[in-house]
Image 1 (cartoon, helix red, strand yellow):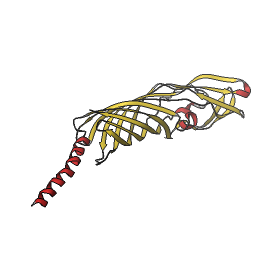
Image 2 (image 1 turned 90 degrees about the horizontal axis):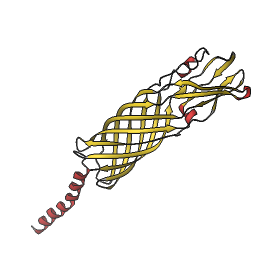
Image 3 (image 1 turned 60 degrees about the horizontal axis):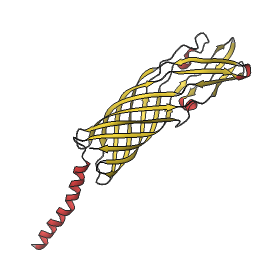
Image 4 (image 1 turned 180 degrees about the vertical axis):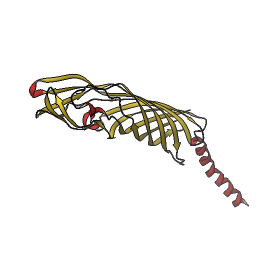
Length: 247
């Protein structure tokens, strides 16, 4: 009998911490605040297409350039924050806001009469608002793996460009290229957080985002190169450090 009682007590002592841990892990009815910051690269997407035309009466050839060609791989900085509310033990309703900026490099985009044609694009800037769901994968330890699914709206600032032919001393300054654009955003994230305590966690996220096409302007009208900016869609990969608070 004593052995049976001892066994029951021992089992209770072992199960109690696990039960408490499971209750602590539940997000149901709890609010969260998340801060994140990191870098972003474009997985695919052209800033402009290639083409042939005539500029200042001279034969002009332009090569297609990706967002990464112009702004560099992982050359964009993105930071922001979000809030969440637990709908069930493992599912949260979330909302995020983020800002991104990337500096453009001057690069050769083609030739004019065989002479180098350079393009200098304005810095990339966007403000993104997203909403969606976060699913936490149940674990018994301090690690908290999760998946986000989001959709939203992104405001991308206008992107003019200055084209130059240095050998001929020719400059086409502030040529309209893309206007301020409101585009749809869809995507998700995979994250892994480490629980510092029941209310604070630190971790990392890797995401995938689709961004709709930008609003093109006819700054090159009459050159035969009007279709260069009939693109602007892209798939991007944000990588972020994440700090979360739950209460």
